[in-house]
Length: 168
Image 1 (cartoon, one colour):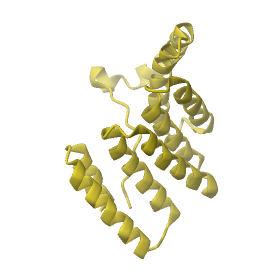
Image 2 (tube, rainbow, N blue to C red):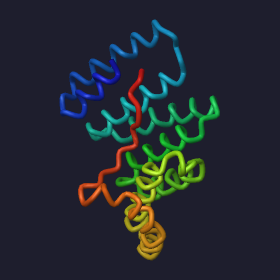
Image 3 (cartoon, rainbow, N blue to C red):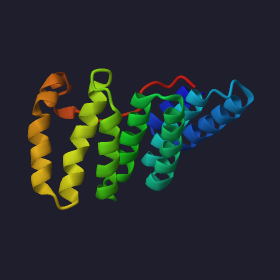
Image 4 (cartoon, rainbow, N blue to C red):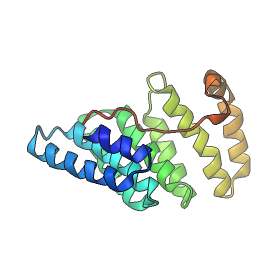
């Protein structure tokens, strides 16, 4: 059901996505209660909230997902939640986005998540510039050039998404 909700979100059927996520929560409550499934559902539902412009609500769900990942000792998934939070909140609140990106990058094992590292390093200069730190933004861009080259196949339509699997 979570995959259905995410698919509905991706095609812009937001009400159908909301209903699918509500069904998924009901099923999850009746099922295993696996905290990792709960965290993944928080991440997917946060993507819907971002699409609806509800950035603070999305950040709250992602914070809950990050707490679950911290409790089970999964630093890479926690990093993904922090980076997703940063992307959700960083444009209206760049200083907050910068802090979340830095926290996420500190936890991230880039060898396991190279595209996630690129997404974080792609957003960081934007937020630094928006926060009045254009020199810092240029420095990050220069340092990140090799990482962009590693994803040369992404081309000009490169887009950062941090949601990964949709297994719940």
